Amino acid sequence: MEFTKIPTINSKVSRIGLGTWAMGGSLWGDTDEQASIQTIHRALELGINFIDTAPGYGFGLSEEVIGKAIKQYGKRENVIIATKCGLNLQEQCNVYRDSRRQSILAEIDASLKRLQVDYIDLYQVHWPDEHTSQEETAILFRELLQQGKIRTIGVSNYSIEQIKEFSKFAPLHAIQHPFNIFEREAEPILNYCKKNNITSIGYSSLCRGLLTGTLKEDHVFEELRKNFDPKFRKPHFPQYLICVGRLQQWISDVHKKSLTALAIRWSLEKGVDISLWGARTPNELNPIAEIIEWHLTPQDFIEIDKIIAETITDPIGPQFMSPPSRKFN
Image (cartoon, rainbow, N blue to C red; front, side, top):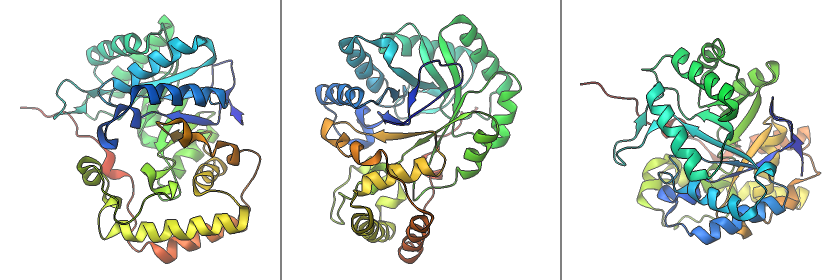
């Protein structure tokens, strides 16, 4: 395993992190708790010690599963748990951004209870709330840090301007953004992190399953997932599948690697400190051994970009993932 650091956390952190969005079900269909727990244990066996979750992943289900898995594992101090706040989940059909002080105070206590822990290693604002000042949110995070409820502070899906404003009122240790071969809008954020000694975390490294190479044109998606990401609908889906097929053939011919290994290696070598690997069965983690101790060449990056340019005429970014802001009467 390759390792990195998160400022103020003394232990080393795996550069591959386990993403647990799918363990909450929702977009991904039914979930199996025992399989999820086995997946977490398998990840830990493979050297992955960074686990990322959020209350919004199955309305607390993902956090609950992680709590049970870590309890069974028995070595809390060996696991870096990252979770989030800032989404109001009181009504499943009406989720919205909410980073007000009173909302986050309720959220962190609920997360600690679900995770069955006394502290959270990395606590992140899930989405910026335009109706709450960065000052209010950041000052509360600073207080939580001082109280020992959290060990480090992070934000997710923030612009550079929002990051700078937040940093006026609290230290910022990590920034999380979607980043993968098909979604590269976060490149300026990665550069900002490097210049400011902030750990960068890339999520959706496998582009919600597209970069596994297992999807076919006749694949039947859950309605929620299909409606969520335009890449999984016509006319975009056939374009992406053609691209995936060519990338899969190319990486097999040139490096004898899987497409999944390419997707993670690409994100790591593009500058992400931690790349999140979403999985919910142990077997989905099998390609991890392929990722370690090999590198892409400058010519490889050129070839990847060439394949994308030749196959995807109408690219879709990650903007569709943004949840709504609070509404006022």
